[in-house]
Amino acid sequence: MRKVVVSEFVALDGVMETPERWTPRFGSEEQQRYKFDELAAADALLLGRATYEGFAAAWPGMMEGYEGPGRAELQEYTDMMNGHPKHIASTTLEGPLEWNNSTLIEGDVAEGVSDLKRRDGKDILVFGSGALVNTLMGDDLVDEYRIMVFPVVVGSGKRLFGDGTGSTKALRLVETKTFASGVVVLTYEPARD
Image (cartoon, rainbow, N blue to C red; front, side):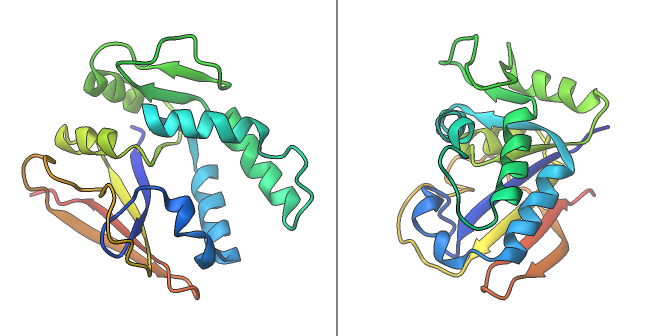
């Protein structure tokens, strides 16, 4: 069975909103390698509406005019982002979706994601998509949480595990990875009694 892996950028105070404003100064080659390997270990993305719309606006044209450092690596990552099937949980979007290989999850999200997990394949990655993550967590559909904690306090904004996440969920720490930039990746699995 495939795993649903939630991979998030989070500030020390739990804020996940607009990471493009507070993550760039902590970027590093080791972080880029980690994210590359993570995407390569997956073969599908699972996204909420807002994250989908942001990604769909950015990734198809990501390489246009880019001649900066790491172009070959960025091209390979971009090719994976654009090529992987993308499953979108939304009650407001209507198909067909414009971004390559994107489809709406029809009907109940929990049933749709459960079906995706039963199919053959690699990991299913969830980026951003805070409301979707909380829904998946409430339905016990997340197999692994990779929380990339940045050494910054943002102060306000949408938090990953905000109000209304439902019942208490115990997690078990399975790995910690620290980058020289001060960014720490905390990997958790649901604690099974």
